[in-house]
Image (cartoon, rainbow, N blue to C red; front, top):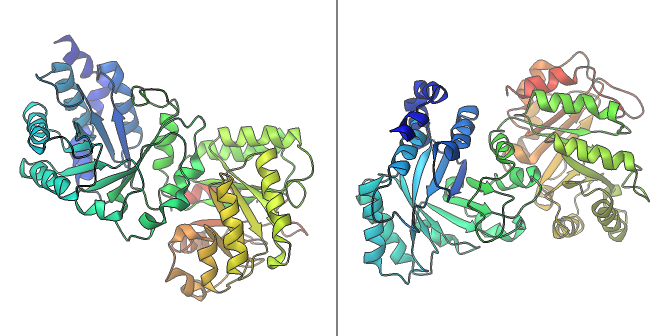
Length: 474
């Protein structure tokens, strides 16, 4: 009884007000969120971070995999019963763990575990661990799960299997490895035209919170979980950056990529740090540019700025000039390698882009091979849209006026999602509220400034905070 009373705390009662609505949203939303292998004994203290996270991020669907004894166990545990009640009332879905031993385990034994889960705890779905190659085995289990009244099946393939796996379970876990994977190796899943909710990644042993990776992965992965825990049981504790993970998954607004060509002293970077803290749902990327590239030696002021900006959840791009593909690819790659050695930004910004597929796709491959999460290129103009295939983001307009009408970029809108497209406008005064609203319908990344110097990016826009505030509502 004491366990039950502890769970139904004053804070928990606040969750009850919205519980039914949140539960319905979680059950029916066609968006992903986070799938948490919660292999932790679910005392009230243990589950409180989950309840707090859901309260702080009601729009992020959460699924929690529970695992009493490599399955449901042999008897009902009242601590699990109480925890499941609390989590479900908060709008969190419950998933029961079942081991399949690469489809070597007799299907009758697996079905018995599934039936026990339903009898003991009535979870929302089942997690079929160690998924093997016998797809008919898993299709039969999915049918059995749904025949008992549960809503979904999740199969843990653990690696980059054929997309046909998505035909036999509702969600396929395609990565359960140590360290961040190279997302370019998952091109089969990215081009499969599947709903993102069909795909999941559970990644452990990632010491530093990878905001840029999450941004890229969310484009095709609907259920994402990353932890800094490692060792034999990385799922036995929540990540130290769990709140950052939830913040990142909650970011659905148009973002900004700021050409921050300002010497990054503490006083210079503090305004953008303050703004990022004030509007955490806006993705802010900063392009750093010490010397039309990374420079020839490490600058401790930049090193400190990188640490400070990253701690605020701001992502970093290193500037590299390509001179419309006329600059030697070797020199470009040397700059990228230097960025990696000096400051380790999250991605690379390739300025002065042209249509040259071999050149830019090769550079992107090189950057991704070094571990960079994103490559943006800046033609600054409405070039042939095929260039979008060579990089992650294309800045298709950079000028000292607002481009109207926006339908002039229809060739890009027809092919690419907004997250692929960026726009930069300078000499814009007064603040263009209407334009930002309209551009947010087509561009995932917008930057506007009233500066019109020879270098319009060597200072903040006078309306920077107002701009980010508006992005937080788009």
